[in-house]
Amino acid sequence: MEDANTFDPDLVHAIFKLVWNRRALERERNEGADGLDIQEKIVLRPNGLVGARSLVDNCVKLVGAGASKKNRPTYANANALKLSCELLRIFVTEAVQRAATIAEAEGVSKIEATHLERILPQLLLDF
Figure 1 (cartoon, rainbow, N blue to C red):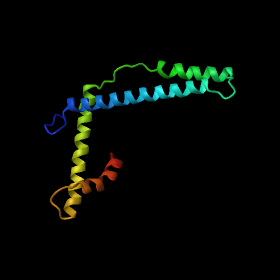
Figure 2: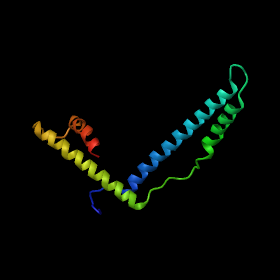
Figure 3: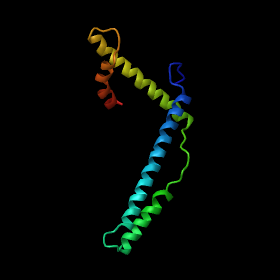
Figure 4: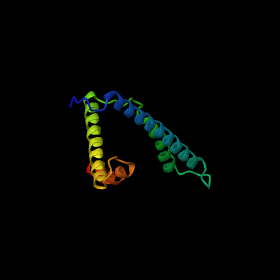
C-alpha cells in the first residue's frame, strides 16, 4: 500500500475534517431550527391550553435534542486514512481506465468530461 502514486493521507484527513465540520454546523443549525419549531408549537396553541402529556413530550424533545449528543471531536485512525487513500486511488484509476476505453472506442485520444459522465453511473454502482 506504500505506493508513490497514492493520495496524501494528510490531504485526505483535511478533506474529512472539512466535511465533518460542515456537517456539524449543519446539524447545529437543524437542531436549533427544530427546537424553535417545537417551542412555537408549545406557545402558539389555538385554544391557549396545552395538554400535560404533549407539554412533557415537547419539553423532552427540546431538552433531549442537544443533551444526548456531546460535541466531541471526530477523528480518523492512521490505518483508516491509509485505507481511504488507497480506495480513492483505486476509484480514480478505475474511472480513468473506463473513460479511456470509451474515448478509445470513439477514436479520440483525450478523455473529456462527457466520457466521465458516461462511465460514472456504473462506476458508482460498482463501488
